[in-house]
Image 1 (cartoon, rainbow, N blue to C red):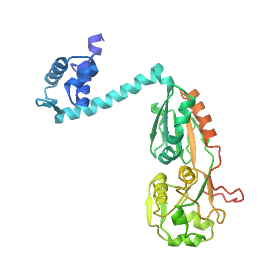
Image 2: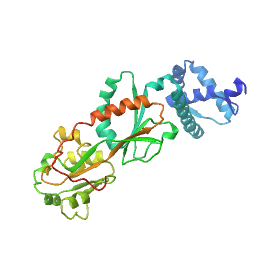
Image 3: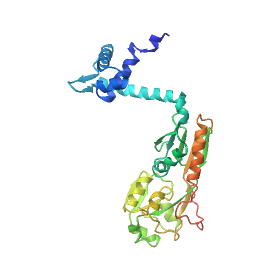
Image 4: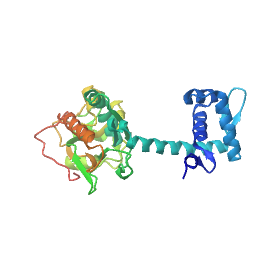
Length: 314
């Protein structure tokens, strides 16, 4: 296959596709020309040739603006996806990748713990770039998109290194104002109990641990712990949450544990760091793992060492 064939796709040159992508992204031929170091006239001619080759108009043109046609929007979706795949491929073999750490994390851990602390990690590793994505799905390391994942619940995989990130304490948390009327566990029955739907430990677990029957319903629920924590800090009600996840709000005085030392709290290992045993970024992942262990080493607020209850959930 010769160079001309390499640079063509069904008779369409890749350079014209690149010109189209830039014009569609910027919304003007002039801005695309500036990015590509071309003249606006050259960009316009390239787009006209592409439209002729494809047999369909890609832009609606007016005196001052351009707008994608329906066919242009379809092509742009595919071109954008293809360019993103190309970027990942180039990144995976480039020298720059040696200074890029691609992390995936459970959303609440990312929002409450990881993001606020990342500046200290970056300060300790000048020139390092961190890319962070968050979702409830586990990262698929087979596609090479991520180097490490912080997951909620222990993952399973023969080719993974899995590190537990320490025990977390789960206790009722609320604003100082709401806490004023809470002296004993039964006082919670008169309050709005905020539920985190995806938590492994929930209000029924806590009530059972304290010898009480759980109420049949909760007045408010969220699908992420960081949303439940924010709602409790805003005075909506009482959340049953990890003091590790809520540490910033606790230290800022926005949340308190009204029953600390007077009830049985729940303890469990909730989060794990996992990464491929043979990953190409093992050195960077190792540095990140060491830093994360040090960051999480400090005890979370309100841990009572006399409390020996450990949840059967983990």
